[in-house]
Length: 461
Image (cartoon, rainbow, N blue to C red; front, side, top):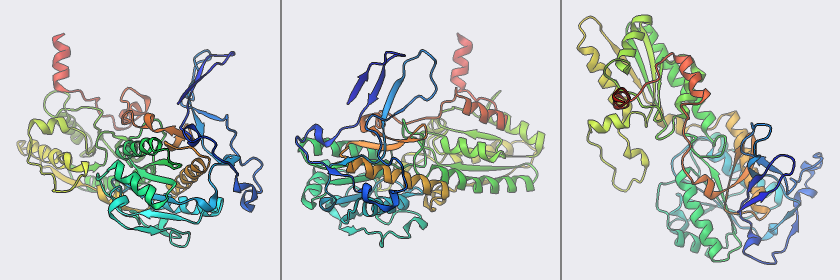
């Protein structure tokens, strides 16, 4: 739902509003928000969010420019659309692991219990297929008390297996009226399908998405859960590579980090480390041979300082690997997108070794580190724990207020309700013409690599 609101003093702004249960179910009763009787919130001067509060997508604008797109601000509402005693909520985790999943599960359960007096919360086991093929597990504050100290998800997860009709049938049969879905880009697309089917059937069910991906590739929002932890943990691998490289003459430390289509982890880990000499990401193409190529840069850096560290995102250089395809098999029954990518870290390491093997005057040592699954499986750090808590509570506030068909996430530092269709428009990428990438280039002093064919084409023109 998009609302155009005239602003006489400056110019128009657009509210990208989210669906509400009252949009398709008439005469819904409302109830006073239980927070008004919660002693923990007695100290808060204003604990209800004004229904007209919005969050701007663009925080920096010119004096006379349009106010642009705004989103509904997340938070508790004065009236709720669910009787707490009648709520049956479910939580499901889908896709790959990332730090913070258990923290979000814990805080949804505790938020429903302690803020709204909801005592019926169940966990769907094993991802989307768990709706119709697995048992559920009851979730209480006691059950989830210390799960935030563990990595992974206590509910289990899986890729694929989504069947919209069967999932909504299960939601109806079990009497579920709030659905909290934790997952990345693909999971949110499928969550939108569940919402559309729920709305088509006229069910009083709030469908809420919570963005989960350490790749940080979900559009609109500032970041998703697990990203801060992933960047911090990546430092350990980079530091190990740097120690190894510094300790041996003509040594290269190669670190492969996650990032199939978006290189945010590699970029931020590189900026945080300051020990990286070259960062390769999917958004910035590079080439190996010839003037200005990666191998020439490696030779130059080794001559200058005798060692170097290269960070490469898993999706970088895939177009180069496809020119020399190596056998790759997708595991039977495994829907993981990781299987679609060849290992650029191993490939790059071998190409570097082969190049220097031809040079009689330089003995090369190369150390390859792949911390991918170590990063995914660790518990969230302090920053992510706080972030997960705020995100989970915002999701609960939105569902209780009757909103549905939305993902909750921070926009310019404020948690907002974002309609599924905007989240699902495409993955977020590193903008290599932006200042952040320029800061990285200034930190590593690496060249801004170009594709060989693009260079040739430019010269021909």
